[in-house]
Amino acid sequence: MRTLENSSVVISSQPTEQRNTFRSLPAPRDFSLVLGGPLFQLLRRAHLSDDTMRLVRQRIIIGSLVVWLPLLVLSTLEGQVLRGSTTVPFMLDLEVHVRFLLTMPLLIAAELVVHQRMQSVVKIFLERQLIPETAMKRFDDAIDSAFRLRNSVIAELLLIAIVYVVGILILWRQHFSLDAATWYATGRAKLSLAGMWYGYVSLPIFQFLLCRWYLRIVIWSRFLWRVSRIELSLIPTHPDRVGGLGFLSNTVYAFTLLAVAHGSVLAGMLANRIFFLGAALTEYKMEIGVMVIFVLCLVMAPLLVFAPQLARTKRMGLREYGTLAEQYVRQFDVKWLRGGAREDESIVGSADLQSLADLSNSYDVVRTMRLVPVTKDTFFRIVLATLAPIIPLALTMMPLEELLKTLVGVLF
Image 1: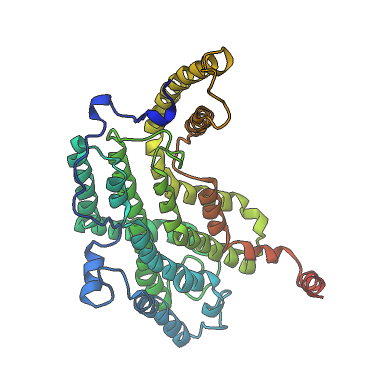
Image 2 (image 1 turned 45 degrees about the vertical axis):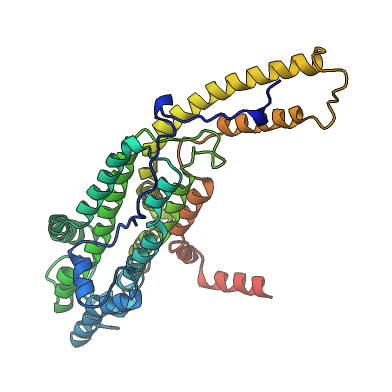
């Protein structure tokens, strides 16, 4: 009788004639979302970056000198640093300090993290033989297309136009600036000198860095979508339970700093409204929820493109492994329960039992396949990273005296 030890079953989402038609691996090719574009080339010429995205500290310091230091100097000259005729002096404007001294450094540091965590994506697709030889050209075209968009001068010029037309003139001036006398303007009226630098230099630079991340997410999504159009060689019994695409869930971790950056932007905005306009944190539950959902969609939605192919692989795996299981358990039943075994053959120590257990485990892996290469751990980590900068604001919901009593009670 044939057991599983003597049989080899390979199931993939491809037609039979396309299976095992892989060429030898080409030379390794790194994939990077950040090594390209006019700004990257400018930073290289200024010796503030290289092909490994190092010199992060230098870029953060230079960025802060350009966007934050002039605001301090100009507001000092105008007498709006700690007090003056305004409701919100410069040094007490938490939104500005959080945006330029925390969020912007996070956006810059995230480039190094994303570059290091995601540069091996292409290699893993090839090492795991997920791309058949017949589709290798389409895979290479997807990579080249992503690099062309990443390096596009027109794309970054459009981002600058969007920042000034939409981000500054419409959103910031009409919706997000505080409706109170501040160091940069009286309500939404005439800007001060510091306000001019803030509105037309500092804020556009910050918004450009943020929008450039959105462009990179679009490039990443487009690359994955093109790869998902290829008939990948997925294995339904792969232990990662996503046919061999489990490595893609690890790419979500690369965007953790980006999630923290989004949370800090919202935290700065809410802090100003709580401290200077008398608002309460509970008034912004909707905004907080929307931000969490937005960040989740931003970093996880690109992976949804593989759902149809994973669902098809699971259906095929259940059908084919179900047929194999039926054949094996029927023969096992005939042999060991219906008197088919030889008289001198003992069930104790028989390889048939181990093969039956192995087959059951394989079928269970197929049955529990996920349709998206995302785990619960990645989901909750992104949620926590987004909420982390907002959580301290919960302290504003408790009176200072009660807060101190609580702290004393915890410590002593």
